[in-house]
Amino acid sequence: MSNGSGLESLVDQTISVITNDGRNIVGLLKGFDQATNIILDESHERVYSTKEGVQQLVLGLYIIRGDNVSIVGELDEELDSHLDMSKLRAHPLKPVIH
Amino acid sequence: MLPLSLLKTAQGHPMLVELKSGETYNGHLVNCDTWMNIHLREVICTSKDGDRFWRMPDCYIRGILLSIFGSQMSLAKSDIDVLHKVIDKVQEESKTRADRKPPGVGRGRGRGREEGGGARQVKGIGRGGDDAGGRGMGGGRGRGTSSGRTGSSRGGRGRG
Image 1 (cartoon, chains in turn green, yellow):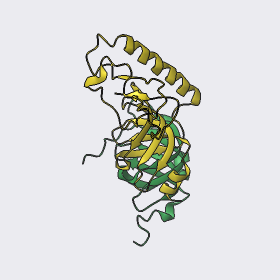
Image 2: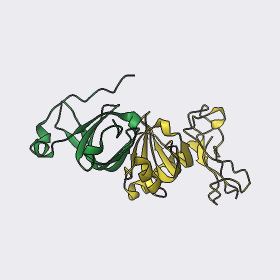
Image 3: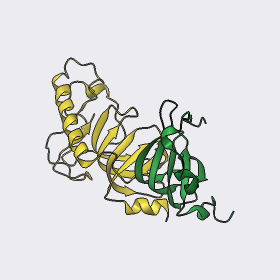
Image 4: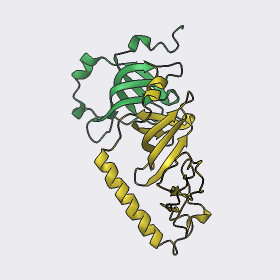
């Protein structure tokens, strides 16, 4: 791949990032580099729990260091807007074990 | 936009930095380099569980230890002020109890005297060392030189 991590096509789109410690951060991809360091704008963290609905914590403009990124995924905003977060129940992800 | 360029642009601004170990550092970004090593000033460090706080005038963190940067302070300015007051209070209390305390428990933090010199740079998270017990002055032993980068009249605030 000539453009490194191939995130170029996702720039200015909403992405979902799973970090090594099992957090899910959703935001607009504003930039990235060869180390998969990621700039996320208007980001929020989604905190999953089996007891209550998904909590969304507003984070704002964030840089996530590439070391700490497990998964970067495209987010379908259309589909996402139809989700009722308060009714979603899920186990929180476990951290990556090296 | 490259993440490192953004970081460079954020110099002089308050930011939140999270380490891989879970501690967070709130402070003003003074400088950063291409390894993401960063120099923060007027820092409040929060433990992973969020119930212990340390304040230091300066700190330098290796980029490889970092996980996340936030441009927003996690707390509003007013909260930070409250936090400063709480820390001051706790420090005063621990100073008065310092004689009874075993070394390490008091963590040896305290306000340095106004000695006019530059404060010694404090790196990382000090563990309450052996000399932490009865010495209220903590690590902020001004060296009386003007070479310290903090070079301020604040004197040394820090820890032993």
